[in-house]
View (tube, rainbow, N blue to C red):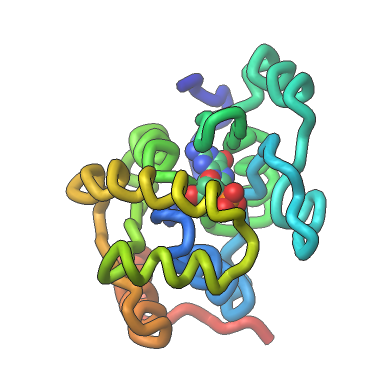
Length: 202
Ligand code: 5GP
């Protein structure tokens, strides 16, 4: 992991979870409800899904473009999250959001989350979102209809490994019921940001 030359200012709120645990829903909820958060748009090399938007969900890059960014030292962290699919957090994203006075929200895999926590140190809150069981995860991935059976199997295998990293996170939230999980997330955010309430977007 390479260090950015920029000084660290705002907060970094990191969401890591097995794919399908609902972290993207949680992150999107926070972004819609509160103006003070901005999303770190990652670069990635996997193909764009039909519902995704280039430059909003991800910066979808060709393998060569991603490799060029690694050489340029453009990433705070990057991982080959799935075989052949690279994902990385761009330094330019953090600077873009901090300049706007936002706290940065990250939706990254477990190893990436821990790398970011190490990088941002006390300015970071690392939240692990999990599911009550492997069966729940499998059902959610099937219902989502965005992945092939092969991809679902890969994601489940990864989940079993990711569970082992849970104790290294600041907070673990089990997403059994979305409403309750959102309430729990908001509670830990208030504590971390040391505020009594977060102003909602107009
Ligand atoms: P998906 O392909 O389902 O969008 O994402 C696969 C996994 O990659 C998710 O766990 C997601 O959080 C993670 N991911 C997305 N962006 C990054 C990133 O910049 N760095 C790392 N390490 N993981 C990421």
